Amino acid sequence: MKTTLKTLLLLITIGTTLSCDSDESKKGRFLLKGNEKMEENDPKGAMEFYAEALEMDSTYAEAYYNKALAHIQLNQLTASIQDLSLAIKFKPGYYDAIFQRGLSYLDNGEFYNAREDAKQLISLDNKNWRSYFLTGLVEEKLTNFPEALAAFGEASKLNPENSDLLVNQATILYYQKDFEAAKKILSKATTVNPLEPNLHNLQSMILFDEQNYAGALDAVEKAISLDKSQPYFYNNKGLYLLFLDQKEEGLNLINQSIQMDPTNPFAFRNKGIYYVMEGDKVSALQYLVELSQNYPDMDLVEEYLEKAQAL
Image: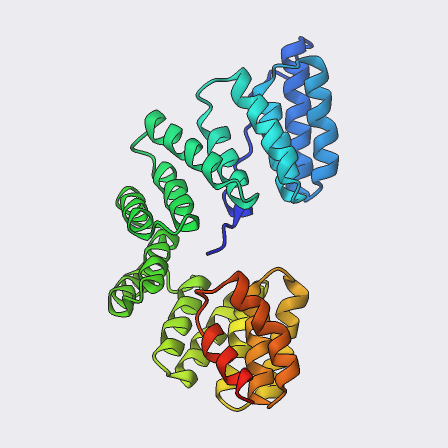
């Protein structure tokens, strides 16, 4: 499951009296100018203004926080963690900063640090759905699926109109191979927000595992029509086309997905499957042997490694 940080970013704005030339109002104006740059999708320009605010007040927690969000937009996760930690240092119990730091830790592979932030959020505010959302993401990464499911369920109780939280629950059930339970939750998510692309992508994955390849293709095409920016949607479509005997078109989509995100091991698995289907033992083993070593529990890897070895 992907964490979409940009959809969760919340800039902090501090009100200032523009007619006053106090240091407090000046640093506030720098903060607002930085926010304007963020709204213009210019995070580098925004950081210059946040830095100006911090020149005036090196303990300005909100400026560190907003500067961290600019780093996140530039995928500078280590820098974002550093700024968020400073924001928390100068403003203990800073909920938004702890939440964003937890997400940055998560995306930076620092799962146990993210877990500590999630625990702190629950202690600060156990009625905020984001406290449990971060907990669910962390436990999912640690493959503690029952704990992840419980956390996403608690988040959904607190924010029942958030379709993402329902899709998160269904995703965990999918990992546990409880397809019927996953489909029930996805049905509920459809009533909340039928235009949620991840909902249709997950439906496609379930249909594929049920060997309904045509249905899987229809569902992932719906996901792509709603969000054309997700590489794993194209990778899934490519996989389904392989099983519908449209192998060259499938390979093209898998390669497109790799160009968009060269770190997704499922795309390389799918290339290995393509070469098995084409009878190319050498190319298939090039992908599948390494995947078997690094991701021994990945679906289809062992099955197609055996098929490749038998060619």
